[in-house]
Image (cartoon, rainbow, N blue to C red; front, side, top):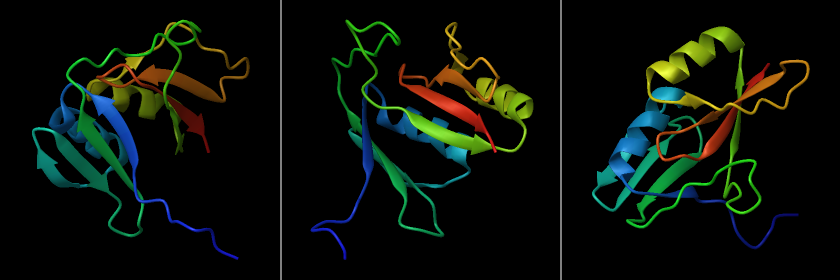
Length: 123
């Protein structure tokens, strides 16, 4: 039985929608399908999955794991080679977070260019 709605987008507030869309396009290998100064979208052409980015000029990034400014959203992204994915993510603008809670190195935490945390997870 279906719900009353279907997921359209996961939307990130950010100071520069086009730039953050470009980062996630590079990270996920999805094309930027729409880009204006106040709104941009990347979408997986093989499905209905999409991420959107909306202009928030006063955006204050989270300071994870600080509960005073907690994460607002985070993505868990599966990768085949964690070391190679880390190098590529950093190359396109990600920052590896100093706090790495995985004791078995099954995932690593990064920040996107707007400060949102995301995890690269072993397949």
